[in-house]
Length: 100
Image (cartoon, rainbow, N blue to C red; front, top):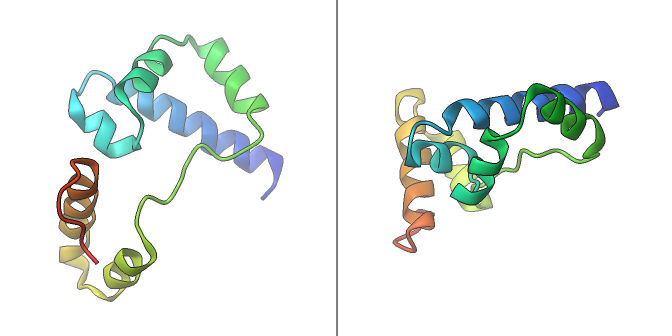
């Protein structure tokens, strides 16, 4: 991955997180970040977001599905994928049942 691609991905993630910060728990589900991190990102100005995106050096995005969950998701019909992914993440974040 080229450095400019990483910069764009991180910038988009930070801006997306800042935008979602107003949406209660949706931000936590959508980003996978704890509320404290979401609140901190929401407080950043554009210069701080740009600097962080430029200097972090790693992707802020991570895949939050297990290998079995990802494999099952790939096999599902298109209209079932979003519901399954959300249910998997919600179940895992609450310490409830995990979906294979």
